[in-house]
Image 1 (cartoon, rainbow, N blue to C red):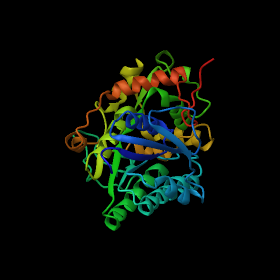
Image 2 (image 1 turned 180 degrees about the vertical axis):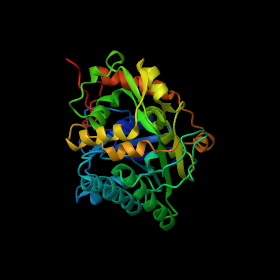
Image 3 (image 1 turned 90 degrees about the vertical axis):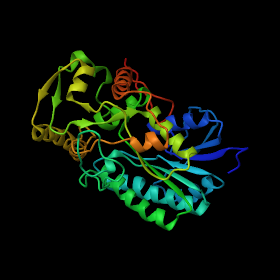
Image 4 (image 1 turned 90 degrees about the horizontal axis):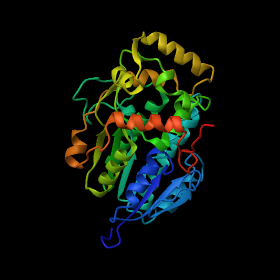
Length: 345
């Protein structure tokens, strides 16, 4: 790297929830010379210092294209991920796992010195729901019945071997909680609630209660805060995993306060049966297996990110959810294919 010219960074999955925030965070940093955003579809959006190229990680041509795009890069941030179709895990495995393997191999082939990989809280094995949460040494075996967790966990095992085989590459694994921002709200509504769930219906007067379920306690953060952690990990000489989350942990009480709704205790088995029935009928895309995983995810201890990266979230968890809810009701989005908005009539 030349300190006079700055870093050349390539970002996969650059048009999604995290990717759009990451390219903006990098593009305004004077230490970053250029950003190349890779995505299946080139977007209409612009970001400072960013150019775009099209790569589909599920295609057989992806390895050659990746090696070409990674040439002379000082770092690759790998964010690309496909959440659907949840009824066909072979398709997501091909994009998420095999596509990631192509990225990792291309980093080696192109001689890129740093790889920052988007892992997730979903990679962790079931754990405690109480503070201070688990640190980065907690097992990453995921919840095996959920495709998302299974894929994230598998890639953790791949990187364990990868780091030993390629010690010259600085590998960082980011493990954030759930990520929200206003302009990603339409995409997330489609991913989890389906295209036919009207955003304007998600408002307090139409949501009279919040279900209180055993295990319903999780962590969220604003996507821009996660992007800042990626920037710091890129610019600091660090390796290994970093947990990312904001306070407070979210449970039925927090959700009820945000939605001005009452809390109703419900049996987990009954709610799971309803989710499974809706998913089986293709009424909602979120699977009961992911529902099972969320109720078992541990809380994260973010001490390492705070101490070694100097990272501090600017938004609280409740502020991130409030922004997401506002985006859902407004049909907010961005000028990228994944984040396309849907304005209410």
